[in-house]
Length: 93
Image (cartoon, rainbow, N blue to C red; front, side, top):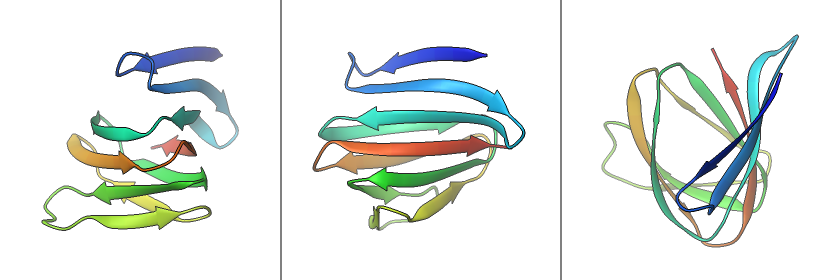
């Protein structure tokens, strides 16, 4: 299963896949500020670039660089800022 997704007028694009690790998306994010929601637990790893993230329940933003992962619990919304074009990998549980 490969499925293309496009959000925020094409500023965020991803391809979904399913394999032995589960359901994943590999994507790219253009410079900007976004709010996402997830219906399942999401492990988001920055592949290239950096994301500044405001996790649910937090009042502060934290930067995640290439190789770093943050986790968002199911049924939550979170804020993301990209100051440069960034690639990411999401794994859903």
